[in-house]
Amino acid sequence: MKIAIFQMNIEWQEPEKNMDAVRNWLQNIGNDIDIVVLPEMFNTGFSMTPEVDAEDMNGATVKWLISVAKLYGVAVVTSVAIRDKGVYFNRMMFVTPEGHIQWYDKRHLFRMGEENQHYMSGDKRVIVNYKGCRFLLQVCYDLRFPVWSRNRNDYDAIIYVANWPEVRNAAWEILLKARAVENSCFVIGANRTGKDLKVNYIGNSMIINYKGDIISTNTFDYVVADIDLNKQYLFREKFPVHLDCDEFRLV
Image (cartoon, rainbow, N blue to C red; front, side):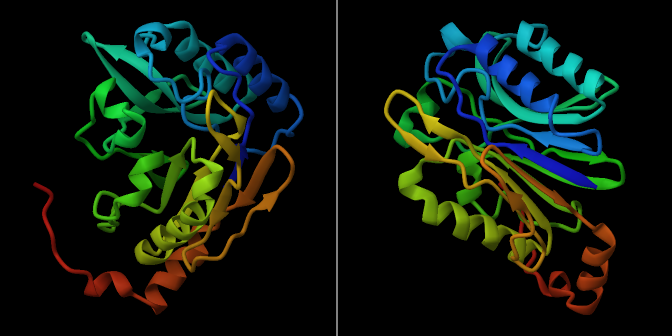
């Protein structure tokens, strides 16, 4: 399965410009990609004004995600500020070419950026089965909380979409590798580039295998790699760390 990450420079609160940038990029990546991953809040940037930026699930951005997934024959994964039943969520969506959407509401809200004051926290882990691969959906700050992403032998890969600042780039790389190693799984980390109102971003998106090796090819604006589940299954058979994991229960 081939996965491509567009580590885009998000235009602040300019949905149309950001959607145009994604569309232009999709036109040039070829037709052998299975999944496209975009950064967190790809259409607006990491905005703390959801009353201005949020849409509902019938809004223009969600409709656009459905249309491009169908047009280019790829699954599209990203997050968007969503208004649902009078509250706001940082909602990560996995959109298939058939127009099916599964979503995950970000569990850990970034209090240092006051995200917890503007959005509602999700309470459900979400795993998407696509083309025989089981993907755990996670958003940015979730990366720092390993219990929430603990592999219970129920997924094969984690996808993180993020707006992770340059100043904490070392933590980004260390934690992505740690999640891959401790869970014996592939990890896909999609980050943005450029600058929003205050923060610099350098991308450093990557795809990591179950041993903690970066397997992706990194170009200026995108990252791409093939993930081979058969090799992962063989590794887990020969090195079955999961059989000795501690039991736990989320409360």
